[in-house]
Amino acid sequence: MISVFDFTNYRRFLRQRFSELKKKNPLFSFRSFNRLAGLSSSGFLKLVMDGKRNLAEAGIEKIARGFKLNESEKKYFRALVRFNQAKTNEEKNQRFLELSRNKKFLAAKPLTSAQYRLFSHWYYVAMLELVRLDAGEKRDLAWLHARMNPQVEWKSIKQAAEELKKLGLLEESAAGYLGRLEAMLTTPDEVQSLSVANFHQQMCRLAARAVMQEDSSDREFSALTIASSEKSFQKAKQEIQKFRKKLHSILEQDREAPRTFVAQINLQLFKLSHPVKS
Image 1 (cartoon, one colour):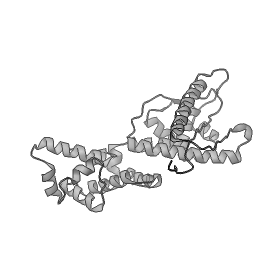
Image 2: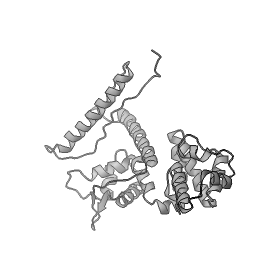
Image 3: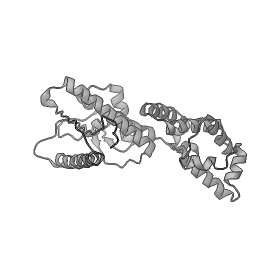
Image 4: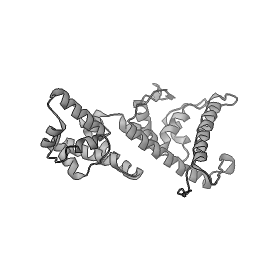
């Protein structure tokens, strides 16, 4: 039987559980599900599955009853619904933390929480770049900890290193020296979009800190405020994306001087007003 703890999207769970029950019993239908759930609307479950209707508390209870979820499954399903239907990034974070505290979820998805933290904490990515530096030094945890700017707590560095090793992104030698591994991550879309939003939010805060605290020779900030059409706005997005890829390629291929530090480059474009009717 498909387990709800394997999912980070409740609509996907509903579709797959319904399909599974239908496969086991060809006579199983939306009508028979409605009888089990106590639903009067014949199209309710289909609308929810297709993303055309959200679930309130009463709907959660009825669907849990229809699929015969036990108490722990129902509790997780309720948290999953709230996570998927959250409207703000802050609420999504709160709801995901509720999910990640569930022992059965951690057992079913042991790497998902680590993947969430990878982008939700800026220093995970910084650590992966730090170990690539051309410094002839012993890159152990103490070395990483001493080079973080701003400073990060020792226990956080240690936890990050352990999770990066579990994700196959970092390796540690018998002597305790750290190295970068190239690995592909298959993060669920719902978790990936949330953690990437967290990453950009944290980098914006670090940029705000840098403009106030770092010497002008150690930073570059510029801004342009301009009236635009929607067509020009989309064109600007495309040009920024092309420039970012070109800049990444240039910096990766540059071997004229040794790499001695990690830098962050933020390219931002956003609307400062609502559109006016033309």
